[in-house]
Length: 244
Ligand SMILES: [Mg+2]
Image (cartoon, rainbow, N blue to C red; front, side, top):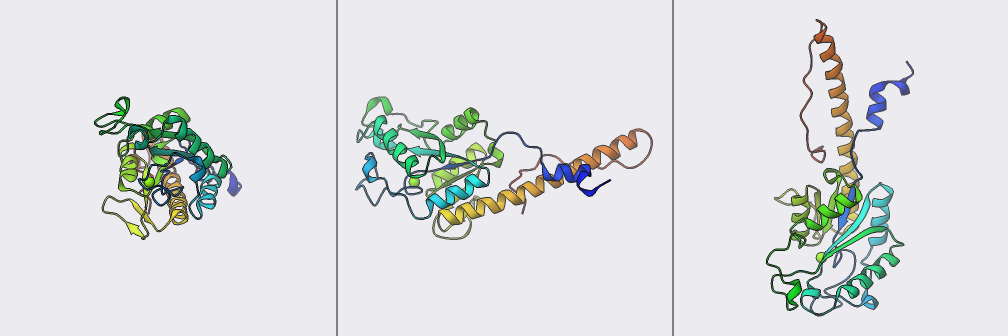
């Protein structure tokens, strides 16, 4: 049998997965400057939108790697009455214009426990990070496989939302390593993108190996049923990100 036609190699090159992988991106002070351009961190003016360094290139790397890009942002400025949903949409549109439309879905949460605008007052809205509502609904709408997906943000609450949704998390914090929660620590967004690509490739190899083992176990299992050979038990499901 020619090497490239071996069934195990075919499996290894095309691991079985369901759904597309996504990277969920926090917006303010992850993709665009916020706290340094507005006194209170509430950005509702599209003319103030400025990409942070290397954001365009990092997102292009993630797109090329096959990730769907989604922006998930807490927008308590709406709850504080500083601007309305239309301004949030305008800022997001300006941002995506600068990114040549690389982000396919924008979600934001206007709710806050101490909202001035009563309709946006909520003690613990399921969409407000660290709650995972925005990620879960976007994933359902776009056919995203959360176990192969990631969140990137500059606050622990971004990473926590990812953990609650079942994604990996990368915290942009100026340092390298891992937090006690197991989140990747990244110096900046390019560092985060590189780490995500690296981890995802490792996870793909790991998943392919698992499938080969499961297929081999299935083959020897059917031999055993016929009265010969020892069956290797297929492994249980493992988190594909725990590959390293
Ligand atoms: Mg932020």
